[in-house]
Image 1: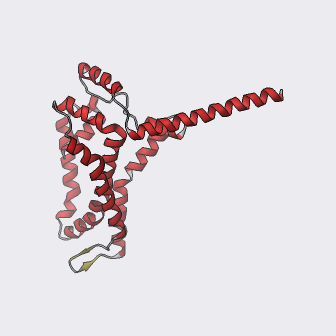
Image 2: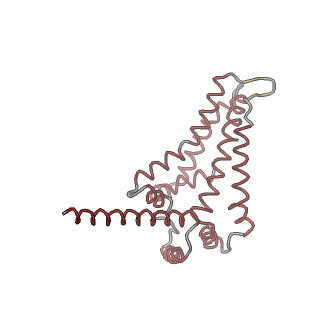
Image 3: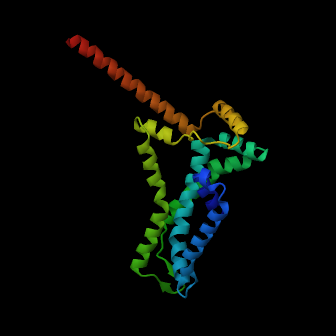
Amino acid sequence: METVIAGIIEACPKYLQHRRVYVTAGVCLFSFGVSIPYATEGGVYLFQLLDWYASSFNTLLIGCLECIAINWIYGSERFSNDVEMMMGRRFPWVLKVSSSYITPVILFASLILSLFLYDPPSYGEYIYPEYAKVIGILMAVVMSLPIPVILVYQLFKKKGTFLQRLRFASSPSTDWGPSLPEDRELYLEEMHKQPESLIMRLLNSKDKQTALCIGMQRQSFTYDAKEYL
């Protein structure tokens, strides 16, 4: 619950930072309204259907993407420095190795196995009808749909080639960082000293190669045009 509330407030901090009580009340009321069907006589069947599809697929997918985004796109070293600025101590190396390598591999393997070893939903001896399976799949898709939609939207907002748009969309925004001015100035200084993550370095190298090829093509075209004239 606290994660959802913090995410909503951080999306619009200027308007919601001082209205945390109202945001909390709104989230609680919405959660209460959504959970009412699960308290009915047939709520256990609805809960089992949601747990069968959403909890298995979406949890594994979102957890794996979080590990990749934090450790491989944002950078595990940069994340460790952020933790040190907030907590006063760095991110433990055991957790860094686990979240960078072990956890995403296990989650990805579990996700693949859950897709290949799929069983139709059931509750005791009750077997769900076909339309219930369709509803469960739709619920799982709807919960994961914002991820590709936001990705396409961010790529569409940027300018340049596809690799340039992907690199800009994977970089922190200009307003990312501590809210206090003194902490923010220190954070920006340290951020420029930190090495980029592996994926960002690959995108930069590919982008430079693309720019070099385009430059060579333009030079060749200019040379051919001069020869023609």
